[in-house]
Picture 1 (tube, helix red, strand yellow):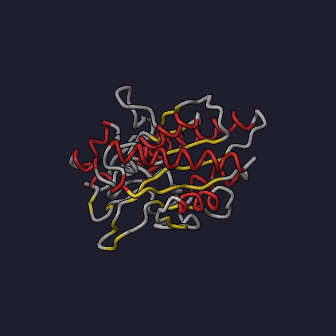
Picture 2: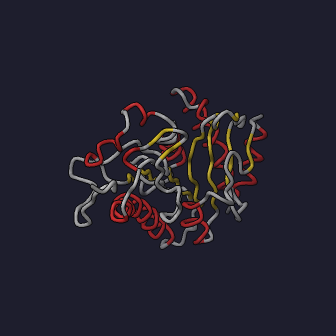
Picture 3: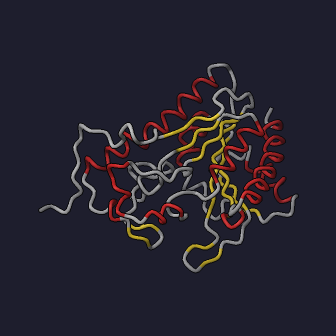
Length: 261
C-alpha cells in the first residue's frame, strides 16, 4: 500500500458543513486602507480529520496567529476599513507563502509533527491551493479591484502576531514592522510606535525582504503603500491586551494613512 495521502481531484476539500475559505468584513469601508489577516483562522475541513492532530493543537501559535484576527477586526471597525480574513489554519496551507515554497505545507511545525501533511501527493497539494489558498487571494484581488476602480489607491496592511520565543531564543520586541521595498507606511509607523516607548523591530522578528508574499503580491504589484505588522503574542492573551494593541495601532495608522495623501 502506498504511503501517499490519497485524493480525488474531482472533489472539493470544503463541504457545505465547512466555513468558506475567507471572510470579508466592512466591504464598503471608507478609509483608504485595506487590511488582511493571513493567519486568522484555526479551521480544518472536516474531510481532513484535523490533520491527525489533537484539538488543542489548533489553539497554539503553530496553527494561527494568536489575537491577530481580533485586532484586525477592531481596526476595521475603528478605522472604517475593509478587511479580508483567512478562515483556515496555516497548518493546512500558508496563505503568506507561495504554493511553490517548500514551507507552504509543513510536515512538522515548530517541532510538532503534522500527520496529515506527511507524504502528500500532488493532487492533495493542488486541492489545498485550489480550494483554500486561491479563493482567499482572489477575494483580496477582487476587493482591491473594486476599490482601485473608483480611483483610490489604498494602503495595504497585513496583521500578524509572533511567538515570544522561537526554540530557546527570546524575541524581545513588542511589535515588528515588516516591509520589503516600500517604506511609505513602515518608516512613519515605526517612528510613531517608538515615540510611545515601544520596542519596535525593523524587519524583525521576520524580514519583509524574505517573507512578504501577500503584501508583495497585492500591494507591491500595484505599487500601493504596504507593509505587515507582527505583534508579540504575550501581549494578546486577553481582551485587555487585544484592545490595547487595537487602540495603539488605530491611533498610529490613522496618522500614517492621512500622511500618505
